[in-house]
Image 1 (cartoon, helix red, strand yellow):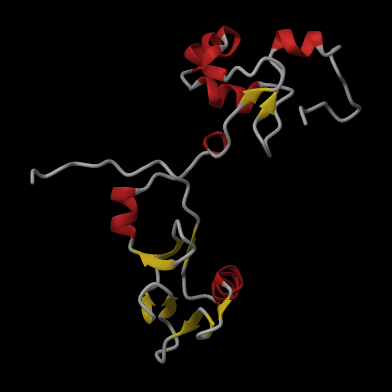
Image 2: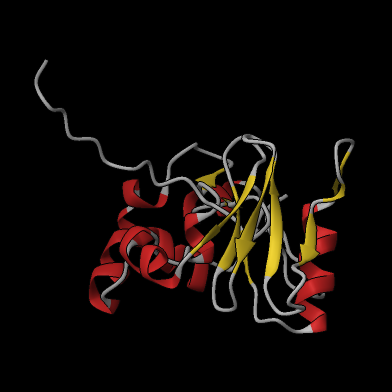
Length: 166
């Protein structure tokens, strides 16, 4: 069998920094929750500084050193990751990367609309980033917007606080 090379999928992964503080302890504890096996999934080690996360895949406690992040994996498991592995493997997701922007009128995405492509090139950004930053109808929760033509066709909806696409 030959060796095959794979690229990691660009899937958003949530994580929280463990800095040893009481606030971080409370935030991580609330975020990871509890299990029927152990109760709380995050606890302090006997040394009072190192955190511990319960590995539900392997049914064991794993140390979390200060400076590591607790990661929520793709199947809901939690594990620590070192700053070195984080730097080599992950890039902090930008808000416009977390939802797929699509015009709710014509179904086009920013990279299909010249009105997004041209200014994005001038500004040195992607059409999706330009839309996130500059499109007045862009809904940041779900990525919906109306391109210029669809906005006009919809009757140019307005609101006292600015109109965003539902």
